[in-house]
Length: 114
Length: 118
Image 1 (cartoon, helix red, strand yellow):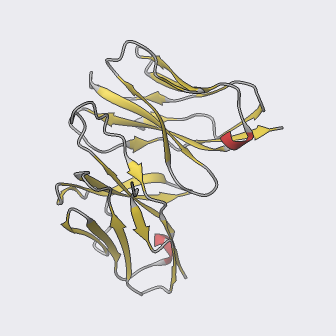
Image 2 (cartoon, rainbow over the protein chains, first blue to last red):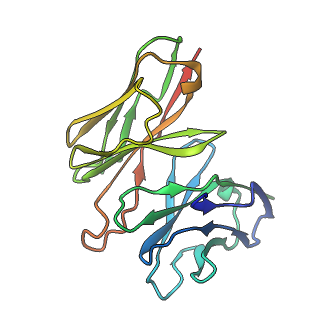
Image 3 (cartoon, rainbow over the protein chains, first blue to last red):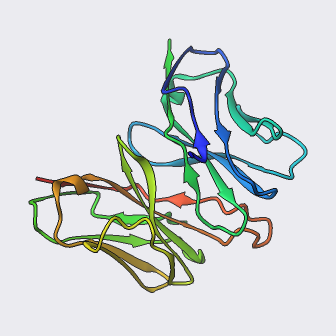
């Protein structure tokens, strides 16, 4: 079974609108971490935001927030006020207890139109 | 501060040739990871090191792939002999161990090495 599932291969949004990118995960651990990365067309992987499984508050970083629903095992990324520069691939990833590595989802391509 | 540095950025080679990809992690990071990215399989972990010691190489596709980390500031991923199906972007990443201080174990990625095997 896939540990990280991103069901949206592609998403379109207009500039200045908010968009939610979905991510569900599968783990039996109680302690784990969830990450979102952005990969623009230039190819580099850029860390956006982190949520720990014991964090009581949803993580926020500027225009990025993470809608963490532990019981549903979902960790959706919300981008507010989309900008043209947000057009990129977005990857959700998880680190499980005792591991240093991240397992990545297949990604969602976001296109922001003017 | 310098990030993770990978070389070469692009490599085009012919089937059967040896390919060596290089990585310099961020100074002070004690974990290093090699990932491969393809359209079909996404981002796959090949191998990772903690304190220069290989911990998990179960993602290495086959014996043609090998990785070394002779010291804390350098790692190589070697493919010998290379095949067209090895064509991919290879990323090196480094991190602090999760739990060191307030560290979350975030991975810092290099810009990747795009390999094309003809």
